[in-house]
Length: 359
Image (cartoon, rainbow, N blue to C red; front, side, top):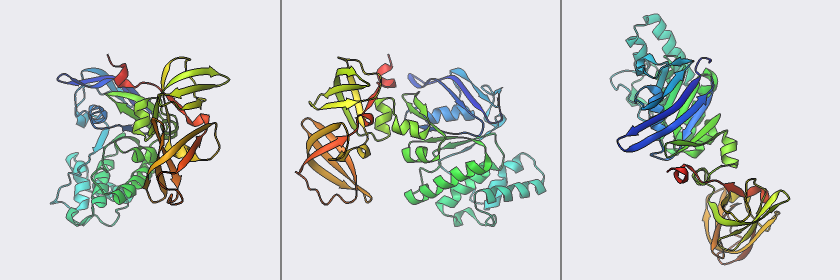
């Protein structure tokens, strides 16, 4: 096992009667950026705290760089954690905050100075070491927190929603900063967030968590384009979810009838004739009067303008579809009759998730 590789094996953790983490196993490669993504209460932060040694576990094992650290306290593990709240020392300068861990480790002053300067350069705060932290913006303070973590040269850097307290513009800036820092360091990153955009933009792989389990693990493109379960689809904004019955299967496609009476075709594998199924399609895969095997007649009910695009709510009998269209959408109006079109390859078969499988 290489430096910074992480192996979580059968991790289980309860708080009273609540099972927070359910037999999770996860492998993180050396230098990989893996994100634990999910809503509040899904177990992602508990799993990160177990990895950091800040939380005990009921069963399982934690290995880092091939060494079993399950019983080791936090200071014996080759990790460092960046939290949502910076927890900077207000009475210390920027350099003093970054140097704190090295001072506690008893490093020589010359080494501390050199490593602090290098860490500040790494997060683009070079030359700002003498400033007080109360003179910094929120984004700069978060960079100080990052520098304080990386200056200790951990084998694994853990990040617990470090950008959630920042405004949108600062979050976007810090997203690029953290991704760039990962590239410059080559260190293994394990990142926790509930923000889908952050996960998609920054990660090598994403572990989508639900009910204390990893519901799907894959690259950003895989979990976005091919969500496996209803939960993953909903969490990653596949808003067109339809209950249906499979009427025919053959020739590489299935014919389904939704509960609202709409007949659709899908090339997703795994359909069984006569069975119930959930299917989903992304709003951006739908068009008005475009190409595609699926053609659904409906009426425009509502429009939401989002700047670069408009999202239309289309009523098709008992079913409702959301269509994302570039531009203002002003050439259409509520009440217009429309035909929504999309390809059979855009209609995804979705499995039941962890909640449905749970006894």
